Amino acid sequence: MFERFVASPYYNLRQDVKDLLAYLQECLLDFHIEPTKEKAFKRLYKEEAYDDHKMRVAISNLFKLAEQFIICESTQEERNQSIRLAKWYREKDLEKLFAQALKKAEAQQESSPFLDEVYFQDNFKLEKEVYSSLALKKRSDELNFESIFSALDRAYFIHKLKEACFAKAHEQVYKRTYSYGLIEPILRYIEEEQLLSIPSIAIYYHCYYTLSDSSNIEHFQSLKKLLFGIDELLTTAEIRHLYLLATNFCLRQYNAGNTTFISDLLDIYEEGLQKAYLLIDGKISRFTYRNLVTIGLIQKRYQWVKSFIYDYKEKLEERYRESMFGLCEARLAFSQGDFTKALDLLQKADYEDILLNLAAKTVLMKVYYAMNEYDLLESHLSAMQVYIRRKKIMGYHRDNYLNMSKYMRKVLELVPSDQEAKKQLREEIQSSKTMVEKEWLLKCLT
Image 1 (cartoon, rainbow, N blue to C red):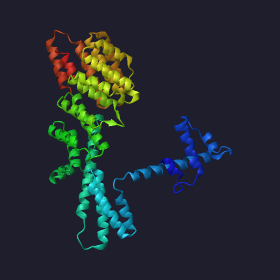
Image 2 (image 1 turned 90 degrees about the vertical axis):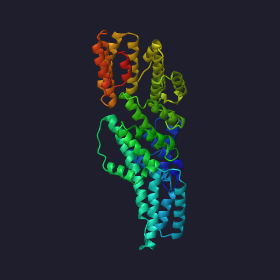
Image 3 (image 1 turned 60 degrees about the vertical axis):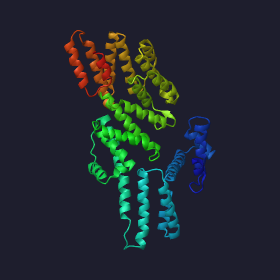
């Protein structure tokens, strides 16, 4: 498509730019070799002596065309292009053509399956065109200001709530605090004006409150219900973001020791996989893959976990496929009591990703403990703590893993017969708000 764009005399009259694109395509697509300016220059200007300035001008011209192409393509992606056309006809005072384009735009809005932010933005643009037309002909009549305000409010509320949800999620992971501007009056207005009847407003409203107050389970349940029924009202990309916000919320609660949302989490994951919202270009992220295995193991659905691990292996990014598959196999083996297999799988794998590495180190810690290899475990915990402290950008995961290793040491230091110390440690672990493997550590004290 870009090749035709560059070849069009409307956009480009320079032959050297066309030749440069052809040269780059041959290098990168056909022969898979690295292009050079010197070879490109010879291709473009034949026997001329190499001129770096001239070469850079050709490159710059091609780059500008690429940016222009991106703009044109993004314009083509506008959902209701008849609104833009109607505006052009109105500005040129072509009343008949304006009326036809406006009618087509209105019909397109009515038939739209979406009720998202873009839909209400288009409604606002459409109402503005109606206003611009009416204002010239019937200045003394009542105009459509209420429809303009209504569409603008709805588009803004969805956008504001959406960004507020992302900010809340970021706050919780990276321990930041943001000012939310008009969010409180907007929330009250939505309630007073009964705008929760609009699914795209309601889902972000409940999502915001879910992320703000985990103790209010009603908001989470409303979010989950809306999430499972909002298909086709929002774009696939937007629904995917909502699934990720919901699953990340549940995971944070579990990592903090709150198991309330575990069954809900698996429901959301299964629904998201079934409807392919958790797949991007047919691929599953390594984090989603690992999290699904975690939840399946918590619920002791071992056969389901085994099937999932193998069924979705090929859908993992190739870069992480073998390491993630091996880690999940090791976790399943450990959960079923096959410690030798788990140890073998963990020792063979290479984990570049920080969180993946920590997950593997955690399983290895549990294997050493289960096999009574306490000297190895002591050494492993020391190395693990050094590794965590070196990695500064880990968000809440840093405290989670540091606390886990700290309490694992305390478990090892206990005198088995000291019941009072054991009881005190159990209470300490239970009261800790940031720690992975809390339930497993508590089982070590039974």
